[in-house]
Length: 485
Image (cartoon, rainbow, N blue to C red; front, top):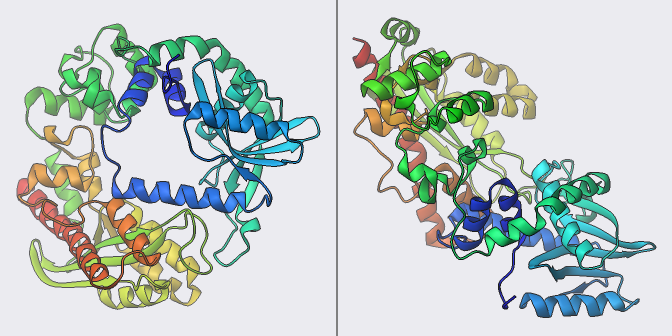
């Protein structure tokens, strides 16, 4: 096989789901540049790997190089009994290549550790480990034990690195998965290394495939059945058996849930489906003045502030639009934390002042309630006041989940979808225009990677983004009321 013609972990695991997906994973990997959030996650992964290696002093790192040369270097190190730990051990066999994060010499072979940035051992992570074990086994390595080295949920910033990780032994599960992989070994490689992608076949897994709507079957179907909310495997199978892929083609009498039927009706008629009486009654519950609230948060694999844990979600800012009547903005209040420290106490105290008074607090989804409850658990003395705020919440998204559907929603009800369909307002032109970028930018400030004037620009962009979220709620709420009038 020519140099560079090999199958890696991402290709194989995608190929096990669908051969076409595996081909795309190998050949389109760099077609889209990574986002700000993607880059941050990659950097965090490298840092976690570095810290994990510090747990095994004396280990030897296999330099990043062409895989054949790296595999030869790995074999040389494994043959040296003085080498007890190898980092990035590389194996290449049968057209496959794998890198083991940490390989430890054991009495009856080798102990394999895969370092992950997660706290919980998901099936995806165990499959990942099993792939490395399978390639190593085919290369002649006796794996005595296979484990995931995960982040500990009890670790707090300031604890020693030895407390950052927890090992989960997955040897038994890996053995079972490796047996399943063996049946797909030759076919996945053949499909992935072909010059053209295999002919795709529609399956339920297409729903979560990143290539489906851009390069595969989804590019030819408008209003695909995957846009039906909560589509089950059983319902999908029944539709697929009838060769139905588009919502307008769903046969009369096919059993759909009420939300799914609303979507179908809107697509077929090309008009919004509105339960006007129920929607009007829902909106009529609002007590004025109304406070429109949105939180932004930050979280990272490696904690950013003392006393915080991996992946702990920390509220960093909020925006509040105050309206005395529908669409009548009488004030705007906001808070953005100092990224160099944990400001949750200051944020909570300011928030209570900014939300003081009567009237509903309009939000979009249950996220704000979750964060208010979390702040209440953190600050016992503020909990009664925070609980009162939580009791005043009014979830505007429920209007779209239950009583209003527009054909341009395409099965979703997020504010980024509903806003442009109903209101002449968007996030276009904002320096930060999505939540993932907001999280990444704040995290970089907290890590000291955005200094001086650049940090000031980011802070302003974060304030504008959060402010747009609450203004969007004001405009959507006003629009819904006009629709019902």
